[in-house]
Length: 620
Image (tube, rainbow, N blue to C red; front, side, top):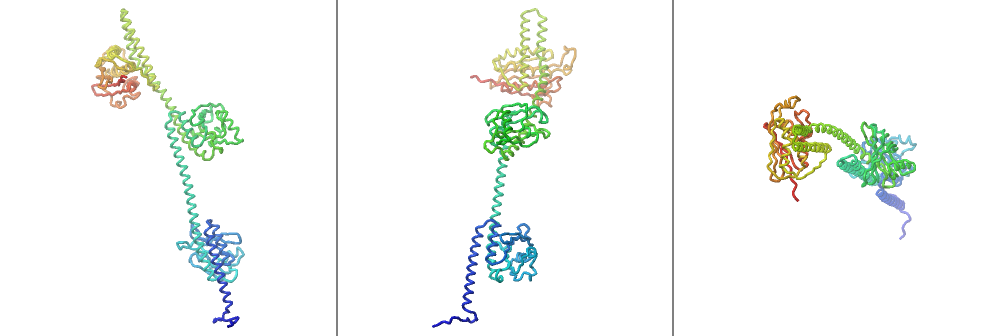
């Protein structure tokens, strides 16, 4: 059977031409599939949005045999504009188009593909770009880019097919590419957002770590400064913390004499190593590093290079520290003038002090400045108070001398009226004891002023102690119309500082005498023999069940005024006594506490009772 060389189909189409047509379509389908696969792989590998958009435009242009391709994305912020990426040769350019205007704007608004065979016959086409660039648009194919939620996120558009016109097949291919592109763009945006958020989280984490570090530094610094009781201890505390956080081997506080912070000598407190003691250097000449920090009120640096070598040598010579690098931060003084500088020297690493060290040291210096000013003010106030206290104590000494001087005067008068040698010697011995009492009183007041506590505890015979008190106080009290009664309930021995307890007795006796004496008797008058109102002052000496010595002092006066009863044992508290210093009862309490004891008081309109309890040391 012989087949004919050519045949006509029932439709009149040549069979060979149909085969070639089918083969062309198959080749195109294979090319399209390969291109889609290639685009998909490329889209999956790119994470940079600009590179991804450029890749999409190149692949779309090649696959659809278009002259140009444009990719519009909806503006993320206002959602009212399309931002276009236009590929022209190897260059990618950007243009903006309001949604709803032009071919791409219409597609973005409707969400449907649009094929325009003749652009200039379509009223939606805007030829402005053609006029500006000299390019002529003939045909347009535009499809929407939709994300995984189905929302239009942009438009993919191609211009001017090189051979023939854009077809529905081209529209299907471009839609498929647009779907892949939308997914990839969405993923890249999501990835970029996550990356950006991660960067923000890292920055926030670093900022929080710095804040936590700063807070810990401030806490450690405040704790260290809070334990400091002197300026030197404060310097040591701050320098240890500053050297630790900044990694420095040495540090110093430089304080300038003079109110304006620029006059006088420079006193530098230097510490080398965290365990070294503080040493002081007084410099007649200033240091340039400190001058710059104080005058400019700014951080001053000396680095490890030749230009700063002279400055480092000056510090080495002045402070006795082998300085290679240093940093100085001003210390804020009164009225915005710097009072000195905080200096760190010899950073442990080879880089030297950096921005982080500067920030930390500024933070340390700000807190240290406040503490230093407070400490200086506190020490100045203590000096003033000490001088005031000494003045009052001197007045108190003169006041307290009246009792022993009166006793001495009485014995001198007795000595002048007797020819009995034995009696004179006895009176002289008693007067001598009063001088010893005056000396002990002087030491006691000075110890009180200095806050010292010294006890000379020894065995005391209570009966003999009572007899001496009777001899010392009886005559003076009797002259003021006050009867002295001493009741010794325990006739054994006790251990206490006899001179200090004697001072307690004299203070309480004098207070009782003044309380029971008529107020008119306190004024100056020539008739000293005039009878006062008087009363009874009773001293009871005994022991309680615990073996403690208990001294009880009772008077028949008007009692303690209510306005001072709650602060009776505070220094300089007095009521209605001309020339009174208010130190007597404060000393009574201090002496009792030095013995480990207590003092208490009860008062009524019939008189006051003081009870001094002195615990006794246990026998070994």
